[in-house]
Image (cartoon, rainbow, N blue to C red):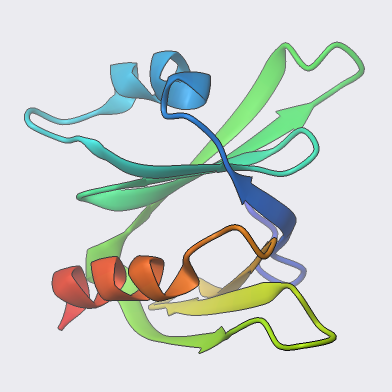
Length: 124
């Protein structure tokens, strides 16, 4: 489970959907599809058309994984900070009703504006 007091996923970069599809697809509801996948050093984040799935890889071998499902219906607000000239990373903060805030930090190759648009289409 995500620690919402210190919920931060750092340096996420876009990766092919196939990197996480096998892990998360057994959890999908009928008709759910992947919209975007991102990986940190070991952890990952999958954006579907229904929710955000945060994957926390645990232990030395990485065989143990914690999956946290964050439904778009629980999003109260979100904030984005785009990359600049010297600061090449982008940040996305999302506040979930009854849970708290999650912060995602993306490398410069990630299209954070597209992610915000996708979230907006599902929560507004």
